[in-house]
Length: 249
Image (tube, rainbow, N blue to C red; front, side, top):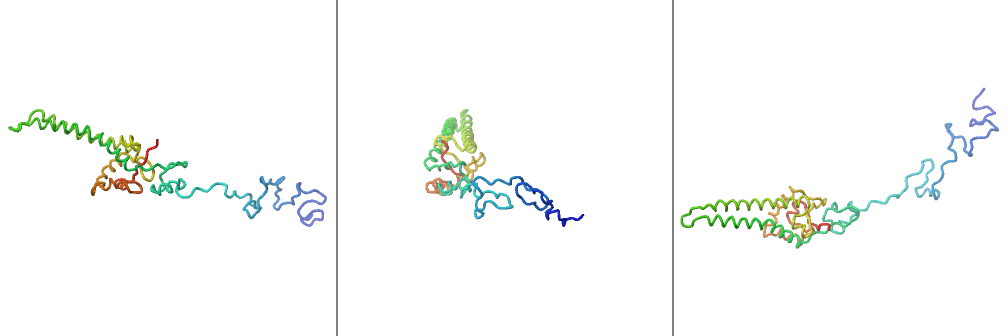
């Protein structure tokens, strides 16, 4: 018995006068039968090869251009930088295509500062005046003897300092954790980080307040700087990286 040259066998290994596999496929190399019925074409037929569609022997390539490209510019589609001149570095702006917050103008900042100044200054000033009056009235001008009212006046003067410091720290805590002091809340503005739009925290709020010393040198020019600055920042804002914007309504 011989193999491969038997006259009763076809070269492919199938006996003569016997039907081959169903479907008209020639016997594949390697002994694996072809799939029944083949693979159905996708809806609409196969695109021409020049369009990068169906490729023989390689399956179906991933569709080209199925997903829209990410918008150019920053992570919010460049709208923030385009609308506001890129003053936030392309990072700050709410997601979802909403417009970025409006920068607070100088008048609103002045109004908020005046309100906060009254909150801290009025009780401090009242306690200081009463304490100073009691201390001065308890001293005999002729003999120089000190009366009992001197001690009360001294206590009230120290209390005025403590009240002023406590109220000031409370306002900085409010600004750092909510973005708003009482004055800023009244006029509708808030302090946030320039790059992220997040609240700056209590510690940075205190640092920012201390940096306002630079705004007063020379001739308080730093406090006037927001009038012409593109980001409407004082020198303190530029040092700590903050901006003052209109609060969401």
